Image (tube, rainbow, N blue to C red):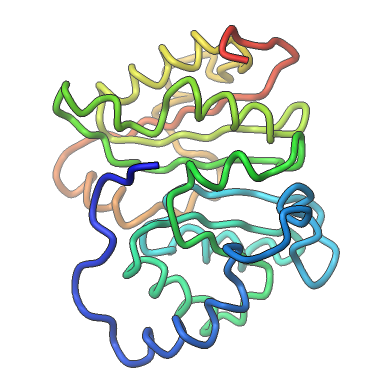
Amino acid sequence: MRFYGRRKSRPLKPRQQRLMEELLPKVSLRNVPPALLRTPAGLFERPVARVVLEIGFGGGEHLARRAREHPDWGFIGAEPFINGVAKMLVAMEDLALDNVRLWDGDARALLPRIGDATLAEVWLLYPDPWPKKRHHKRRFVNQENLRHIHRILEPGGVFFFASDIPDYVRWTLLHVRRHGGFDWLATRAEDWRTPPAGWPGTRYESKALREGRTPAYLLFRKSGAHGPSR
């Protein structure tokens, strides 16, 4: 599986490097038994009410905030960018978060390992838009990934997508409609222009707003239908 994009930028700070060596091996999903990934609620040290996956958590601000707000939930964060993983580890130590597990790599390699109907929510927030047409095939939203997201969500589970790139928003709506296994929960324009209640935002969202771009928030619920990609 080929990965597109950077894995690392600036050198890690001493504390980040220490946490990569000491904490990451304890919370990483890279080497856990396959059976545990098939039943991800068992990844955590104590029972959890639900399990949520964030794909591409960036610097981890949103994931850390949600994990602190919901200590009875289990969170899985997938991020290939080493500097982002290191920032998330710092947040986990600062906030004493014991309900987060990390996949420090491409989420496309994680999705097939997760068991059917085991997650309550999947979040994909401000993914790389790959704006050039010849690079659209690199976009995370495609039929293969939607097939897996639909499969791993519980009945009635939620797929939440946010982006400030109008073309990627249209792309996502078209691909989700083509899949056929999700209901878009918006009933009016305000539903997708307004973030959900209690939304903490992300640093990418803050940048978009500063630069005059308007985010869109797309909320889809897994339905009983199965798209043609299954």
